[in-house]
Image 1 (cartoon, rainbow, N blue to C red):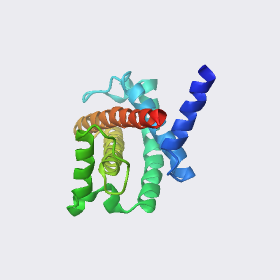
Image 2 (cartoon, rainbow, N blue to C red; image 1 turned 90 degrees about the vertical axis):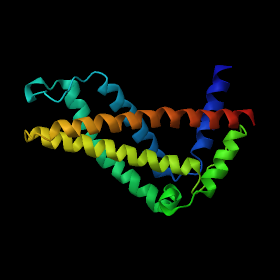
Image 3 (tube, one colour; image 1 turned 135 degrees about the horizontal axis):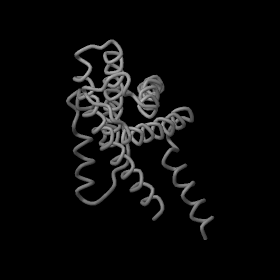
Length: 189
């Protein structure tokens, strides 16, 4: 019984990622796993505006250097996504295109899960997630650079970073919830 559930779950996950190119699929898994790891390590950090270099612990270093490497990986991921899709597919609101988003919202209000399509709600949320991820990584990187130089601007970037991470956390939970809903919908079929 458990093997059947495991096989069916793997088939479902394969279905969720079926439309993505192989490289993008693996980068998606790597980035999401890494983001979850970064969130988990952040719970153990005790870095504040008045933290000094001598107060940085091993977990802080793991989080900081992990974030710097994740920035590079995420930029590659972002470029791959943008090269496969049009910018207007992920950011239709920037072009004043709201019709597809409205259709998807109407479907949700009727308790129907809309299919993912260019310029739709799922694509828009994906685009916003990518922006939130890059914002969190850039503000964290700038905090580290300014902190290392002893700049008085470092606390401001730390504050911005923590706010941006809140957006990423919300995105991870929402993204996971909708992936689960799509998986359950697939499973019912």
